[in-house]
Image (tube, rainbow, N blue to C red; front, side, top):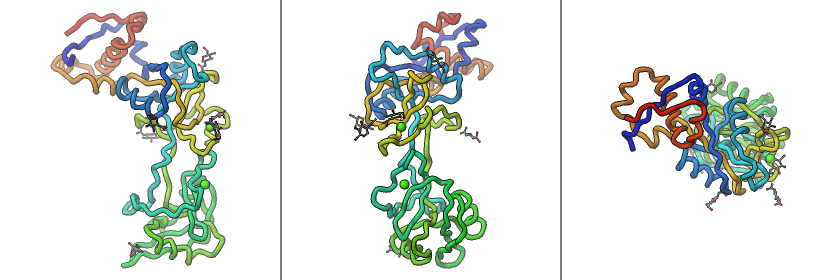
Length: 303
Ligand SMILES: *[C@@H]1O[C@H](CO)[C@@H](O)[C@H](O)[C@H]1NC(C)=O
Ligand SMILES: *[C@@H]1O[C@H](CO)[C@@H](O)[C@H](O)[C@H]1NC(C)=O
Ligand SMILES: *[C@@H]1O[C@H](CO)[C@@H](O)[C@H](O)[C@H]1NC(C)=O
Ligand SMILES: *[C@@H]1O[C@H](CO)[C@@H](O)[C@H](O)[C@H]1NC(C)=O
Ligand SMILES: *[C@@H]1O[C@H](CO)[C@@H](O)[C@H](O)[C@H]1NC(C)=O
Ligand SMILES: CC(=O)N[C@H]1CO[C@H](CO)[C@@H](O)[C@@H]1O
Ligand SMILES: [Ca+2]
Ligand SMILES: [Ca+2]
């Protein structure tokens, strides 16, 4: 298998096909989001990543609605990383102590990535809210906490602490939590240094392009951390609980190739890496989708 390399002759039309960033593969089987992810990584490259409007159109035009059985929605590779809590201060980033108030973190409206303390217990909250805050000052022999009576966003509070002290406070155990509580006037909410990442693509792509349906993500049931494209709404994104069984979309690409083939002599001989990559992508597409032939690509050689 490793040595069976196809070289595709590129005609004008074929070059168009080689510009495709993601070649989507719909799977019309019902799986929950985690099962869908494993399936895509095993059989193709990953769950579908959608990086721009071209991808949206490609996705939207690849679906066969007649094969969908669950409300014309299919899982894609976007999820809210609700388990990524860590501390701003690098030396404590993995410290595990938590003092959540009952029912927290609840990620209300899918928008709560930063943490404040009120009389001891902690709450997750939108990072843009303005609260007073507590810095850690590690410059002496012992760590001290400093209460800043000046409401700021979490990010501005972090910058302020980094400039004037060490960082936003990390809280490593109940003793430290109590010290902070004693420092802050009763009934005052203060940012501490705990925060998390939010939406991520399973293949590590940048989450910069967004295509949410209006009013999404809304975290309607408190646990909506996986995303499906709605093909009744131009493939717009909706958040759903990850245990729902849905059809899903994988993509085929570079990583697929690297996973299933290894480089050999004939590849090393190819002169232009860019055109080589295009050809490899086409090979992959061709292998899985003989229809690509219609785009004018022909296999000219088998080494
Ligand atoms: C998605 O496909 C539908 C049906 O073919 C079409 O009406 C709609 O315009 C498409 N939307 C986008 C964003 O491509
Ligand atoms: C809390 O952490 C501080 C700093 O590591 C340590 O000095 C103190 O002994 C700890 N207290 C408890 C109760 O673990
Ligand atoms: C993600 O996007 C940001 C802003 O567009 C850019 O600065 C950064 O380098 C990108 N990261 C990756 C891994 O591509
Ligand atoms: C939300 O929760 C309610 C009550 O548990 C349930 O009946 C409903 O199906 C859930 N909605 C979705 C879309 O999961
Ligand atoms: C998906 O299904 C698998 C196997 O049935 C199960 O182990 C897993 O917890 C499910 N994932 C979610 C998010 O419900
Ligand atoms: C699981 C869940 O609540 N899904 C919701 C996703 O968003 C749409 C549109 O707001 C709702 O209709 C779904 O119930
Ligand atoms: Ca909350
Ligand atoms: Ca939702």
